[in-house]
Amino acid sequence: MQLTDFLGLVHPVLAVMCVFPLIGIVVNYAWATRQRRLQAKSGDKTKIPASSGIEHKRLGSWLTGATVGLILVALAYAISKNVITNQLWNKAPFQVIFILLMFPATIASLVFLYSVNTKLWRGVFATLTGAGLIILGFQDGVFRRDNEWYWSHYYIGIAAGILMIFSLAIVPEIYKDKSNRWRVIHTIVNCIALLLFLGQAMTGTRDLLEIPLSWQEPYIYKCDFVNRTCPIPQSQVTK
Image (cartoon, rainbow, N blue to C red):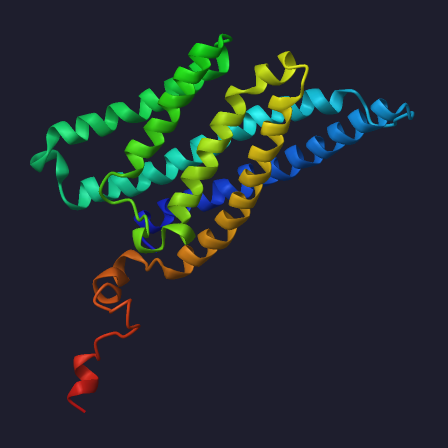
C-alpha cells in the first residue's frame, strides 16, 4: 500500500473508532431518557438517573460534530486526490481557492451553530453548514454513485449529516415547547438518521471492497462495471 491508500483509510478508521461508538452511547441515553420520562409521568419510582437526559444532549452534540467532521475528512481526501492528480491548481486556480475556503467556512458555520441561541441564527448557520457539505460533495473527485443514489455511501452520508445538523439546531426548541411537538420531530429525525447510519455501515464496507489500491487503478478501471467484464490480459490472448 502506498501513502495515498493509507490516507484513504483515515475516514473509515475514524468512523469505527469515534462515530459509531458515539451512536451506540447516544441511542442508549436516548432510550434511558425516554423511559425515565414515561416512568415519572405514570408516577412510578425510577432508578434511571436524572443525568441521562443531560448526557444524551451533550453526547448528541458531540455526535453531530463528529459526523460533520467525518464527512469533511472523506471529502478532503477525495477532492485533494483529484486536485493533485489533475494538477487543478494550474488549470483552475480559482476553483482550488474556492474549495480551500469552503472547508474552514463550513467548520466555522458549525462552530457558530453551537454557540448561537436565537432561532434565526441557528437556522442560518445550520443551513450554511449543510450547504457547505453539499457544495464540497459535488466537487470533482468525489465518488457519488449517481446511478444508484438510493444506495450510495455519499448520498446516505450527506443525508445523515444534514439530519444531525437539523437535530442540533432544534435542541433549544425542544425545551421551550410544552406541547412536545419538537420532541416528537427530534425523535423521528434521529430514528431516520439511525437507519441511515446503518446504511452507511453497509455501503462503506461495500465501497472498501470495490475501491482498488492506487497501483491497481489503471487496470481495474478498464473493466466494464455495467456488464461486469474486464479486458483479457495480452499474455492470455496470445496463448
